[in-house]
Length: 204
Image (tube, rainbow, N blue to C red; front, side):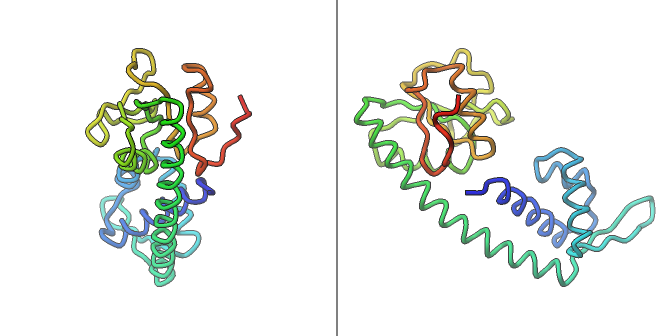
């Protein structure tokens, strides 16, 4: 799974979709809407303009208006179809991966899991845990601004979290780095990694 390429496509799709809905967007609005830094939003917007997906015109009061070109509409349609296909495939594979891991948890006597990374994978894992005798105690994510996710607590600092038997890696953005970071907090045998993440478990 090429998460970097998927993230780029997702951001591009969000930009095209936002501009289609309202052409009087600002770069600051795009950054807030996408949940990324202003510089990154600016970079992706310029990329869309350079590729001919978006046209920009100067408006009064030092403002700019953005609108989709025919090429932009075609790219938005392509990315939407690709994203939906990817999402369905990912949800199926991720769900199967979580169930295999939960079977392992039951064999090892792990009943209470801390999910590490607020993401689509964390949501899938939480839902599939209902099919097994597994309780999700909450989520650890040092970069998330959320306080709660799926009606459970989100911790940004690992210290003080207790009541779990093992950690399950659910970070989709930087899973290898998160796996290595978790080893600072718990034993390696307490870190469960869904095979859908395809990371190097020997790297420490």
